[in-house]
Length: 175
Image (cartoon, rainbow, N blue to C red; front, top):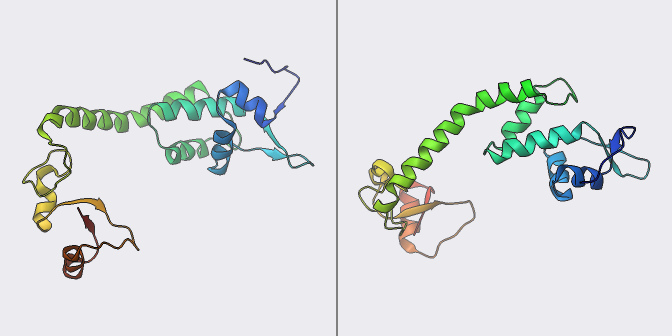
């Protein structure tokens, strides 16, 4: 890993990428999402403060445990402007994220335990499908199989779907 002399206080995007292990495109993405910041030189090149290395490490560690970028950005926004996250910051934030991670782990364990009950077809017209239709939630609304949430402008050729839309409004897409 290339070493950066102590006297250098700003890094190019290439140097930041090499030192952090994050791709240049990832760094640009992080910047566009407000996770890191840079200044521009007269030649419009990005320059990152040396402390950005720790911010990138913080972001990547949080991502590895499944924390969404929006949550990471909100956490970093709580720090005083431009301050590098410390060990204490990580401890405080990771404690706050623990319950969210515990719930995800619990959900994944339930999915794993019920995986053999699923026939994998995606048909939600079954009375109970513990993976796609727990407690037959969709069956209470209407019969038929539904799997994908419909997006505006998505037109289906299935006449039954159009008829269902007229009755219930656009909600799910029939399979």
